[in-house]
Image (tube, rainbow, N blue to C red; front, side, top):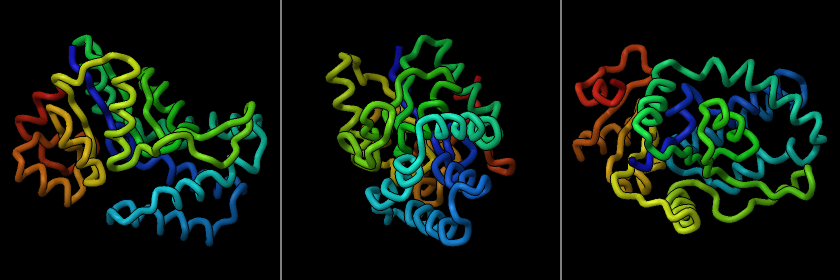
Length: 232
């Protein structure tokens, strides 16, 4: 039995969940359009470039969670899952999860996305262990503060080590699937790193290190023998 870790955005999903959540709130009239959309894109571009200030991103994402009631948030969350997330769930990603589940592996999602957005997505994949950016709540209301270390870049390794200590799981034979060069700290830490539809920086690194490259979402992406073996 191996420990199998998955990044979420652009890895298990064929898109970015926090970015999609912001667009969803704009489209239903909760957030004002042009300025918020530009800021959402600016932060996403910074993530792609490797220059993102994670706390700035968290502050941006937390504003609607702090301002609206838990009942409204839950209703919007359900609609978001149906209208935005479900179309980003591909058969190939589900097959990858189910292959490891059938092997008896321990599954976990490790994502920089906040727990409000990512938790129902983890449930959609029937993965009970989620290491996400945790948000403080008092009762059912969000305070606007983060709990512990955000699961971003080196923070993913820190949070995983904390989880391993708490649970007693072993990392021997571990896998991590990710699309992003931001995840290189954890990719280099596990025994079996796998690049999934990788960005250009990660693709170059994976090729230099002879890591498997798996295409789950790219219609025109090459499928190597290593990619095929990971899905069958």
